[in-house]
Amino acid sequence: MKKILTAFAAVAISLSVNAQNGQQVINKLCGCFEVDFKYAETFSPDPNYKYHEREEIGGTAELALPIEVSDKKIVIQHLLVVSPTMVVKHWREEWTWENPVIWTYKGNRVWVKDSLPAEQVKGKWTQTVWEVADEPRYQGLSQFVHLDGKTIWQNTTDAPLPRREYSVRSDYNLLRRTNRLNISDSGYLHEQDNQKIIRQAGTDKLLVEEKGHNSYKRIADQECAVAKEYWEKNKNYWAKVRKFWADYISTHNVIELKNKIEGKLLHEYLLALAKEYAEKKVGDAEIDNRIKTEISRFIGPEDKAVAVQ
Image 1 (tube, rainbow, N blue to C red):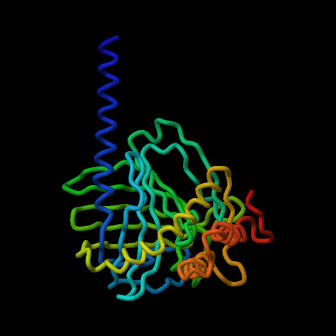
Image 2: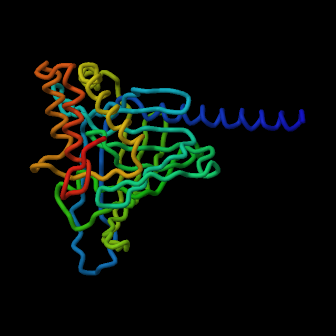
Image 3: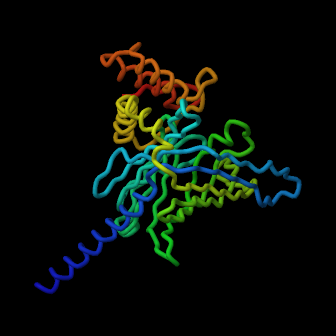
């Protein structure tokens, strides 16, 4: 019996060390970075497909700010520094250790909650990516692997179209993305091997493949000072938005969201409300209900809104 207990203790210590190592790696995703995003379509099975122009967005700074840290969870808010006087709330990522719950994207802005067996999540970190309005985007899980002096995390998962795509095209409705993070002390490289999929009646058809190359080069924290100031002024509002989503997600097994209401995206409404709240045009007594009202309009299928219970 003593040997068995000793063995169990060794396993527990091993898992704890792995979790701690993962935290150390994830901490390297935080800080002030110079960002550069590049995308290029590479192959289509259709010989008549017309490839889209390559895209490159760069030359700006982005602050990846840890806003919640515990032994098994790290939440990082991204803030884009557009100019010395303009900051844009960007996407949010959440890292959880051995998380048995995964939200699977089914297409057409529908996510379904799945439960994974313990052996499938053992020793793995789940990355959850949330949109600007803190609504779901995609999840994936994997181990951190140390190879040739680099730390790598890789996962393939289905996701909705990113903003750079859904704002300009509608010839596909699902992005199957392979995300590969190559992490070092000087920053990280987010490589993407993506498939643009047309999903109809349960059948997937490949439209075109794409390569993404997003680099995050660590720079002086002072370059992101304005982003920290923005967050201090607005963090209470966005905490309320996150709480709404957390409460909703914890009580539902399916999330279905509309894309636009009256020609506007959800984040446009929430950013406008954030400005009203910051200017004290909306008070603490009513802000929670205003947030609920705006988000509730987007919950449900396209033909009708479904009220949040």
